[in-house]
Image 1 (cartoon, rainbow, N blue to C red):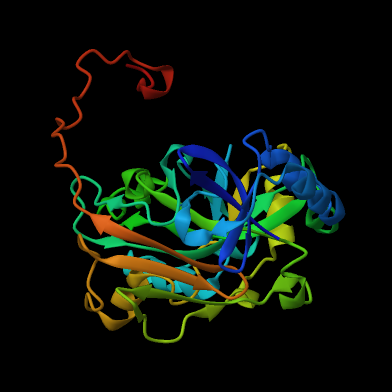
Image 2: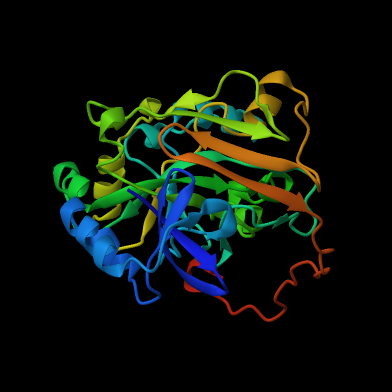
Length: 326
């Protein structure tokens, strides 16, 4: 089942996508209830909540399929790890191989298909990142990977937009990308339930072909396959649940696949070819079994200037700064 959030005749509701059509549900339909349901329960809910006839998909506005409470973004593709760190003048840290690492992204910046993406203030090296994301279906804490599989409602595409020149100077501080990833996160076009993607499973991995296009032209190299994740979705969900409860609608992205960002090409070729994104460019992400999601880049605001840090003039002495015998 493909679960979308749609705007139809000015009202926001849930729609079930079937081919080129969508079945609107009543405005009282609850996304969390759909996510928590089993496939049979979900079908029953859709049957009871269907509102009117199916309409053409082109007649509705697709929104982000979920407004996540939390949004964790991992880095589980080793090829992207190597390329992205090379682009930042860094090498893979041994700790990466010990656990699936992630950062929390800005849930207030989540957008859906066809929503314009403003160039963030001060950015001159705008990039995209092609990712898959799992959507949590029911609460869980301290899960095993086996248990976690029952907590994943479905999957969607995720574009982790990146201002590379805003990230580079702050990454060494160890607090994350700061304003480099604070402006836009695309989810869409809909959530494909886990049971519908079962035919694409290879062992404990989803094996979906993925690629990105800029202005309708695929990036060279042919993209990647999600089977190349170094940890499965079940493993990253289990890790996220350590000591923390996951809730319906939480999103966990797998990180950028190999060849899924411009940064990798810049790092390996030593040139900005393909060039950074500019206003007017359209980025499209494609994943087998899910579909496509596109956004156009538009001009953004001019940054408001801030002063440099001011050094405190009356710092108090601390015991550990005293020189013995003074």
